Image (cartoon, protein in one colour):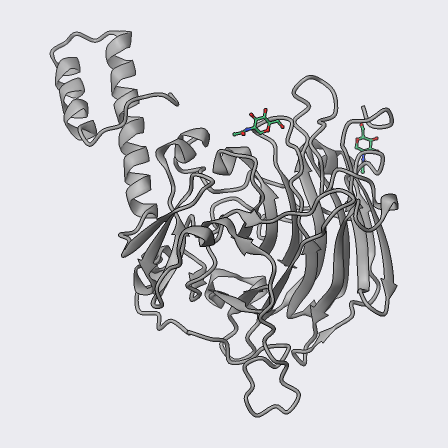
Length: 421
Ligand SMILES: *[C@@H]1O[C@H](CO)[C@@H](O)[C@H](O)[C@H]1NC(C)=O
Ligand SMILES: *[C@@H]1O[C@H](CO)[C@@H](O)[C@H](O)[C@H]1NC(C)=O
């Protein structure tokens, strides 16, 4: 289907196909024509829903088109519960005091952020708009169906100390993570260095992120996720991209990546979800990292996200969630890959830098200054960090702490190797 012609004549050709069939010339080619034109229509409708009218468009050198969409026209407002929602342009509260003008200890916003998004080379979006990565026909066609596009498959959440080890392994997702649980959490922060892991198969991915989790690991798990990922299926290339994800029912019917469904409300005009991050770290060479902070506004209850020191991206309204409308019960940080075992062996898809934690700085991937937001809305060091990995011979994790980096861990690995077949 990937090379099929796509045109606005979809509806006409469908009508013709129907008439053709009504004339009694029922044949398999007739049925096939109808199914192809139905799929075309579905893709077309989906693209129309996702791609909002742009006030300005910017072509990025990686092949992306970034549309600057009026902030009030963004996908979130397709949600029936958000029809009359008044956008909050900034949070009432920030765990680092950035928005509290009266607080003497307010931290100045640092301006020197070496990491940017690739499309910035070719322009910026005007105030009052938000940048949205345009979804192309091929993006949707790579998904199993238009409806599945932009959504995770069921059960990929790392589940430390699960009662059923078989269940852990059967999804084919592998993790190397650090986590805390057993308290009420109101957010989390980490500084993550950015790599471009090699992906063996187009239907696999490699990502590094934090998870804010609420509820049990059953059907109603709530999750807010943010980090970087390489996902050929989702984006059509091997670039490292900033992403977010949310679900309120364990990846079944609700939620999506980035702005690919209505939910997240973006207020920032500079950072596009799903856009390529540049530059990335290189082995024994320059290291680049990004900071991600997600926290719950104690006044409105929305979950806000900040990228780096400068960019408050927007928020997930609290009504999207059940458990997370109250607080999170678990925080996880780390890497995840899909091990599809396409050739019957463990995948060689890399996690992080593709090197094991033992190699340390400049070679391994890390999360540093790992923190949680407590019930008085302050960032603090997490207590009782645990680690989890399905197969430490494939991908591993090692924690530590020091003055500079606070709590940190190295994680990742090459996947397939003599000890991981
Ligand atoms: C997952 O499967 C691998 C290979 O079969 C096994 O070595 C590993 O112990 C399993 N992990 C868990 C947590 O059951
Ligand atoms: C992504 O990388 C794989 C190898 O790791 C390569 O086979 C594939 O062609 C690349 N895809 C693109 C779109 O560059």
